[in-house]
Figure 1 (cartoon, rainbow, N blue to C red):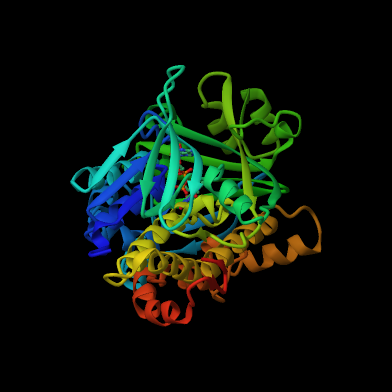
Figure 2 (figure 1 turned 90 degrees about the vertical axis):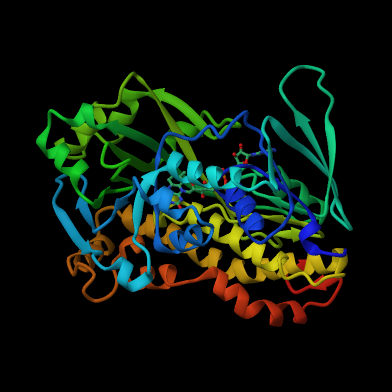
Length: 454
Ligand SMILES: Cc1cc2nc3c(=O)[nH]c(=O)nc-3n(C[C@H](O)[C@H](O)[C@H](O)COP(=O)(O)OP(=O)(O)OC[C@H]3O[C@@H](n4cnc5c(N)ncnc54)[C@H](O)[C@@H]3O)c2cc1C
C-alpha cells in the first residue's frame, strides 16, 4: 500500500456512528469513503438526545458542532423528582460545564445531530452515500474484505459485491456484522435481558401553551427525571425550546408476548398511561397530550462485552459492539468517540504497512475503546437499577444521598453525578489515541493480539 489515505474505506450504517466515522476519516484525508445504509434516507427517529461535552469536543474537531449547537439547549442543571408526588429529591446545578470541560452539556433534536454530521459529510468529496443498500453477508475478512449488499427493495434485484481495505460496521444494535463476524471466529454473543422498554415522546410548544407549569418546564434549561419503582421518565427541551422531549423506561411487559424483529411494538396510549398511572398530575397532563391513540415502544437491549470487535480489516463501531441502556446518555456519544479514535488509528498505519498493519491498527482501536465503553455501559445499567428501586432500606439510603444535591461529589443518578461527569466529560479520546497508539501498536504481534485474532 503506497499511501494509507488511498485505502478503500467502507462504512456500514449511516446512524450516529456511521456518519461520525465517515466524517472523521474524511477529515484525516482518506480519499475513498463509501457509506452503505439500509434505509432509503437518514430517516431520523423523532426524538431528543443529550449531547455531553465529550461528544461536543469530537464534533467541534470535525467542524460540525457550531451548526448542531445553534438550536440546542445549554443544560444548567438536573432535577430528580419523586414520580408520584413531583417532590424534588435532588437538584444538581451544572452551571460551569464550559469552564470545566471546554464545552457545554446540551440537549438537542436527533435530526440536528445527525443532520449536522450529514451536512458535514456532504461537504467532503471523498464520501459517497449508498442508501437502500442492505449488508447481507461478509464473504471475507482478510487480506481485504468482500461484502455482499442487497440494493433497493424491488424483487429480483441482483445483489452486489463490494471489495474494501477497511470495513467499519456501524450497523447498530441488530448488527449483522457482529453476528457474522463472531460466528466466523466460533465466538458467541450473549444478549443481556434488560427487562426494560422505552416510549419516546415529543410535545410541541403549541400543545403545552395553555399550561403554565408545562411551559415553565419547556422554557427551563433543566433536565428533569421523575423516578418511581421500576420506571422513570427523563425530559428536557430541544429545538430552541420549541419541543419538550420525554423518554421513559419501564418494564418490558408488552414485549414478553410480542417480541418482533424491529424491537418495537405499537400499543394503545391507554396502556402507556396505565404504566405511569400513579405518577403526579403534571406527568399525567404531559402524557395526555400525546396525539393519537398509537404509541411506539422500544425494547431496550444490550449485549455482554464481546470477545472481540475486529477481525482482519473489519471493525465494529457504536451500538454494534457496545449497546447500552440510555440512562447515562452516552450511547451516541460513545459511537462518535469510536469514530474519531478509528480515524486516528487507521490514519497512523505506516506507509507500506499492508493488511496486517490495518488489522493491528483496528485492534489498537479496540484496546483504546473497550475498557471505557464497558465501564460506561455498566454505569448506565447501575444507574437504572438505583433509579428503579422499590420501597425499602436501599431506597431510603438512595434518597438520603440524593438530598445532598451532589455537594459530596456523588449522586445516585450517575448521569448527574459530578464525579462521573468529571470522568466521562474530561476524557479527550483523540488525545488518548495520539498518546497511546504507538506503544499499543508496537506491543501487538502479527497474528494473535491480546484481544483475539487479528
Ligand atoms: C430511549 C433512548 C434514548 C437515548 N438517549 C441518548 C442520549 O441522550 N445520548 C446519547 O448519546 N445516546 C442516547 N441513546 C443511544 C443512542 O441512540 C445510540 O447509542 C446510537 O444511536 C447508536 O448509534 P449507532 O450508529 O451505533 O447505531 P444506529 O444509530 O442504530 O445506526 C445504525 C444504522 O445502521 C443501519 N443498518 C442496520 N443494519 C444494516 C445493514 N444490514 N445494512 C446497512 N445498514 C444497516 C441502520 O438503518 C441505521 O441507520 C439513546 C437510546 C435510546 C433507545
